[in-house]
Image (cartoon, rainbow, N blue to C red; front, side):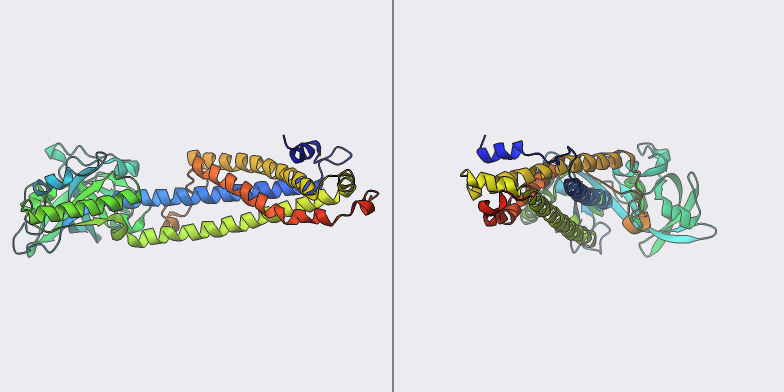
Length: 416
């Protein structure tokens, strides 16, 4: 153990009466509060981005393959043929999954009202986990049965606008081929993601129903959606790789159409740009709380020095260097920081875990797309934040501790 660390450990943060000095209590409370605010800010930012990201990717796939400049003169000219894409799909990562979909605009009509919507027909192998997590009534139909082919999953906002409920039937008019076709659809389930821009537009159904309406085979669809690619970097890399493979297949004659690949960051750029603004808000909060912590520590350092001026003079008189004394008081101040960090981490992590498991803090879903404050606990973020606070605090205390060099031992040994 170094001599400076030994001296700091021998010094007490209590007054001669044995009570913790009020200035130290205030310093610890200020540091703890700053840590709590920083932890919650990071947790809310990460949680909010993750929640919104999952909702966006539930409606818009991570990657979407569609026909670019299709031949509209033929019924299938602008449709994706899943059989043509098998070669390129084999190059996707092992954890990736794909599903063929059909998006068909329709007019929904009740005796008292009507509304436009997009019927999104999912193939038989579609993973309904996203829709299932957001169900508020009913359950996903068993689309393997022919009797459920005209069953749909509608959003709560659309059902309220049309004044229909679970189990009701509604007339749907599908446009195309210079006319329309009418079908009566049954509401088998109702979902609510609180994402009004999507909820007001999308109805989930089965691809075989829309294929039958269009008179095409189930190997054809308007889009091929790809999921399970992981991080944003993985999505971008996979998009470039898949686009290159599809272009090679076109040149070698494996495909007869020009397929384009769109990643979710392009199709939903507005929302992802909005999410990036959250980073700026968090940086501002972290900066302000860091300044508060640094100012609190500097004040605490001065208080500790002023209360031990006589001791500093004695140490200098017996040969202690200014550097040794400065390090001793910096280490002593760091004890205050560590206590504040421990208390702040305990309260901050407790609040994050409590909110993550109970959602007791609500939000207005019309403004934030969520009905609760999302908090995501991240151990790496916690460790990095604490390490950054300790390092910055050490650097900040070096200059203020120089006040010790101005204390002459001959004048302060009798200082009261």
